[in-house]
Image (tube, rainbow over all chains, first blue to last red; front, side):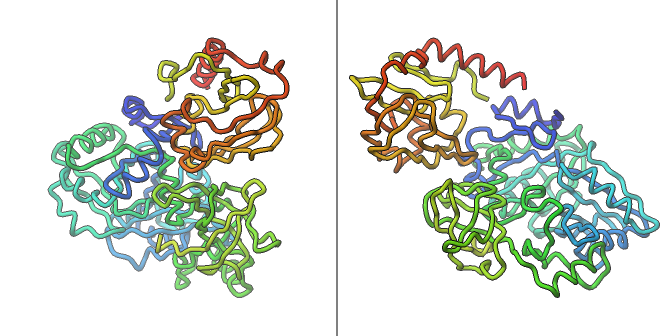
Length: 359
Length: 139
């Protein structure tokens, strides 16, 4: 199994590890609950170095970005980030990721760990001319600093005025301790404010140490594992690649039409337009359980006696103190407020379709 | 990572390979989950126990423990009829994390004392856990 440059530090902190697509990563350090709540109330620090890094550059790079991705990477400013989907010719999602314009004609995208090879193959197949696509996945580490006090903590690491960096923007900021500028993205996967520090592997350990040191006694900070990463993203209805889609779903079914910009040509556009006209049969709904029980992937969703869908992700959400799930359900039953039932090992638990923005 | 030194084991209890404990008084067995089970699961959020009058069979699932991470079955350590369920644990499942031996889940009137011979003593369970943990390390 592969380990990130932070493995020894994580072990030292008492992490319980798990296998995740060939990587040995912390599942939790103390408990998922404590880590989840730390991110909602203060700051949590995640090692997400398993995620990939592609650099797309050259005079044709913006055309390549726009042709490969559903979002529009031409109509954007330098240092802006965008969430996007990448589709196959049938309009099905291959992967989702955040892409940023680092400079004119230079973009970085961060694909999911399990999809690096497949994504790369797809990009090399569909890129436009005068574009260089580099896979730097083995060379960079990513540390995510997430929570309402993330800016306060990060401000102790850099003199850069972070209040001028808006969410979904990035910049190179000076870390005086390292005597280096590092790439800082203001983004994350928790629904909180936060930053993702993208550094060469050789600097990852030092950055990790400085973060904990600078938090001092007055900013409560916790190292967090994949367990909390999953409960945090699910509470906000964020998709997990390979779990909520696996080459079988389109952005129209995942409520992600907002990342599809129809003003440019992209791989899968034709098929997606056709599907849009025809209408989708199922939509992804975020369910909040009103009864006791924990929904898990594969559990069936009912409306009365009729089976109307299936859970793709589900867990117990600390803080909310109830189960939540992402489930594909019949389109006409996917509106906010709809009452459905989840079959939990033979027992029916009532669940409500909720608006992720209000969670 | 859970190590054998951190796991509390109590004398006077019977243990199962699926990490339940039980204590016998006359023909009534009091059942709970071991400290190992609690430490591995962490964050226990729901307990589904059998109901009073349910007939349970040794080694068969009769309830479920849900943590944030996963759902695990509770296997009945012995056969018999359920005579009592601890509603305190159902209402506050997190007590299983803090004090797994002080918070039993259900009690059964056992029907076959011979089944006791297939349960483990504290020492046997300790040896069993050591082997389990070694296996885990190697994987």
